[in-house]
Image 1 (tube, rainbow, N blue to C red):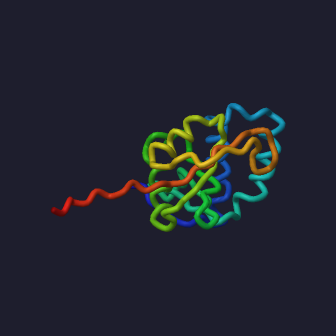
Image 2: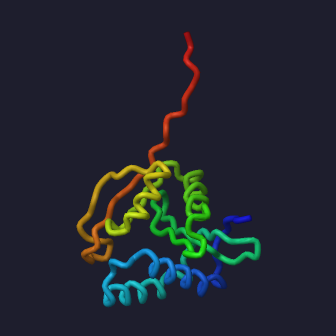
Image 3: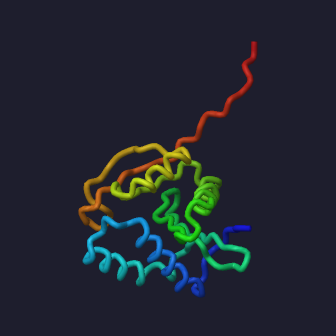
Length: 154
C-alpha cells in the first residue's frame, strides 16, 4: 500500500534517482546542455527540500511532490510506477490542504498536461520561458473543483 510521508535527508539520493529517471522518461525535449544545467541546480536543492514522498510498503520512495504554499513546484514519479496512481495520490493529498492548487508544466510535456487536466485542472495561462528564463514554455494550471450535485428542492 502506498502512503505519503515527509522527506528526510536520508531520502536525498533516492529522490534524485526518481528525478533523473522521470526526466529521462518524460523530458525528451530538453537539450543536453540545459539538462546538465538543470540537474546541477536540482542536485544542489532537492535532497534538502521539504518534499512529500509517496512510499511503498518497504518505505522506499516511488514519487515526490514539492509544494510552495498552494503552488505545486514539482511532481515526479519513478517511471516504474507510472500509471499506478502514485501521482494522483500525491495531488489528491495536496488538494486536501490547498483546494486552490496551481502548478506549471512544460508545454512540450503533453502527457503531464493531460494528467492534470484529467484530475480537474484548467489552463489559466502560458509563459514563453520557464522559471529560469530558458526557452521551454510553461502552461499554467489551476485546480477547479467540480460543483457538487445537490438534490433539487421543489
